Length: 180
View 1: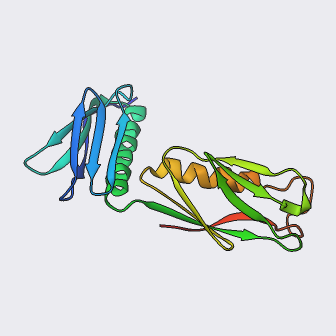
View 2: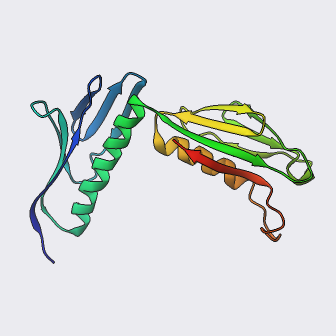
View 3: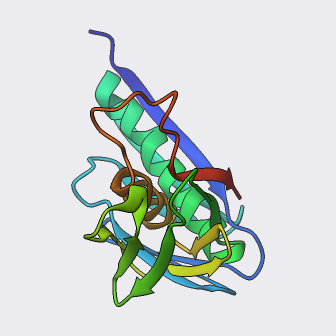
């Protein structure tokens, strides 16, 4: 097993974004809001380099797993910075052949009614602070946290999964059309 002496990844901080690091807890604040995440159990060191305006994620004497963890934590911080500056948006399309599907948001759930003519509604959980708008046969999911937006879209798609039927014939469902 080969250990590298020093592994470091630098993530640039754009203007208008502030990053604070305390004991592995990273707080990113930007024009759209703020995100917070705890990386204390990851085994990497995180620091803010004010001269270069960057976040430095590093590990000393890293094995294969720790080297991978450096890249993973850097990618999470990159996504947090992108979330507070631009945000994330998933667009989903409602597809049906015979029975018109109606979708509505109730509290922290998405209610899908009349899917394949079923009497009982199907439900999908909304994760975190995610905003959902429904316009005709299009569902738009927006938020700052990429994981929450993606998991909410996955929950909606999974709620309309058809079992025990040929997927080439029964293509009804709600599917992700685009990610921005």
